[in-house]
Image (tube, rainbow, N blue to C red; front, side, top):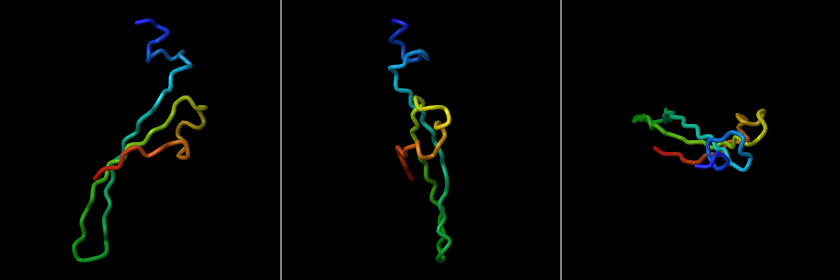
Length: 68
């Protein structure tokens, strides 16, 4: 494979670099006699091609998947 076309080439400016984050959490309904826990998994997407100070800014992250 040509080095210029390699998707792992960090110098390739035409490449869209995406970061996926996964988080799992529980939701509990404290009201009522039958309290149940619901485990939820969320996957977030962030673009690495933005300036460094915006990488972990929550305004730049998008929710991709949320599953129970």
